[in-house]
Image (cartoon, rainbow over all chains, first blue to last red):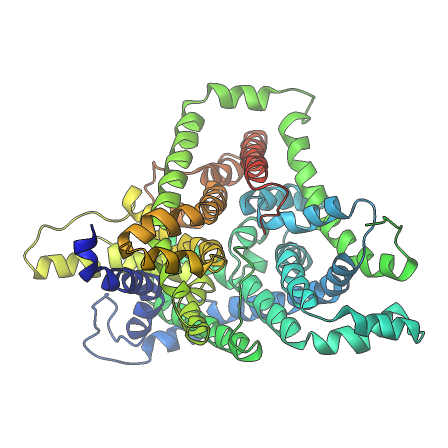
Length: 268
Length: 274
């Protein structure tokens, strides 16, 4: 075995680079295609144009559904931040009976199969007769992003020095004042990345939306999903490029805000 | 760890999130149980007809096969990446992590659409094969398409836990082995790999559990007759409007997930997965 150590140093990096390529290839292959002039897929395109982008703007209802996704994502991310940040603070800073159970319930939407939650919401919204309202889509998305906000914010709170809060308590500040003027200012990087990722998750969410939206509340991913499934129209290359650019933008912004320590909500 | 009850302002901080999650998550889950066994009357007919259904059995087996192969391939591909990143100096590590985080945060629809273009019958891969004079193949709307799409999705879910584990290893062990003359191969097989088994196990369970409920990739890249449980739930909900069957499958899926996670907790002690 030791005789083969000559090639070993190259093995791990070359395997790793193959995987990086495999991971990145799909997102970047759509970019040149989106500037293609032809209605058929030719790679690389023979002539370039912005035709697919004008199709996106002026055909079907792509713009309408994109604006709706934007609206839903902005509202859902805002609500999730407003309710989950104080919740995460309490979970990080205090002990009380039933805390472990409560934490498990609040975080479990990450591990419960999304399709199960989607079916539950579908049945629930039909019974309440609220199917096809923007509010129902917003509630579904809020539930979906809250656990990720809690995880990101808890990780941020764990980095803080609790003594600062103790001092302000002794000086007589209320809990709300401590959260608002002591904790939140220190948490800025976590708050910004949580909000950006919550927005992106909601904007890209497809399974819950597939179950809970109707024709009048259709979001961009739902339209994309059915378009890939039924017609695979070339305008999808333009839509995909827009979504890829959005993801790159959000990732770089988060990396910049957190000083390169960006971590997803997944994994450990 | 004295357990105090919550003071009033802490309770006020916690209440909104609890109410929203109760209304949007807990109650809808209860609806599934209700729909599966209590509508129109209390009965287990929904589950009984599942047990008799050849379609359900086939899809259930498919789901396990696909999830298992996805997890194995994702680990085989994700491990070298984690190893590569772990050997970087900390500053460069974050640049390489962006290469993994970026696909992680890219819409699954973009990736699925890209694979339709790459793997399709007249797609890029087949054009290349044709150009090279090689026989063309069917890479999509079958098991291959699903595995490519799902592995691509799940590799980051392997990289992060395994990397976290690799970074905890004591480098003195490696140094000691080097001094004693062990080859890099031997150091890997006898030190690094055994020490990283907990990370591998954690990522296996995570990937497996999340694949069990996967919906988008099998629907867009899989065969029409190679469904997974999530697609069957969709089929019963929207096509045949058999909500009882859909809810019964959802209960089975949920129970399987819970069982696997409980087993993982056993293995890793009380440590939380996330």
